Image (tube, rainbow, N blue to C red):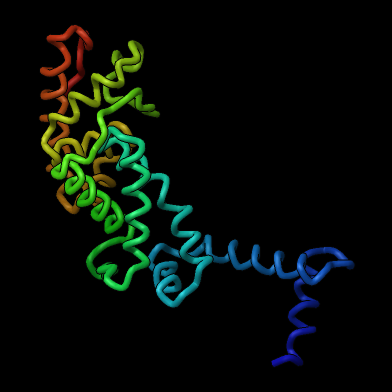
Length: 220
């Protein structure tokens, strides 16, 4: 095996386009090559590598999926602290011996959202979610609410939504995902996503209009 090393290193030298490379620089270059290769893999392929102990595969999965999981948990809970805790717990469970992911039953992304959804529900039932305080929302459900900077009012209205309605509001309105994408993550028909979102908009309109917060809500 050692006899193959010079040839492998010579190839890396040519790829790097440099003549004088230290051992540490060479190892870093080789690591970067592996990272670039991992970026081309699917979630399921990265998961299989991760289960075999590949730390770079886990890091790539975390970088790829953690931001969306955090935003989902943030919007569902109305708490930054809860969002961070849930996002971290999702990946802790993914690494655990009882991860429970089966790629034959759906995508890894849908599985991660499902774990996050369950954790949010458990946290809400246990009363561990903090009261919303000046939460930052990248995209809001109601245009008037953005203009008037009434984020707290939106979270209060969303908090009263049943979980199945809050899910579609977060995915379709706050995350701006398509109906098809939301249906895939929630494991339900597109028509169900549409009807739940319609009812959620009506509910939010009823909650926000009497207080004069929203002048008009467009119900599609």
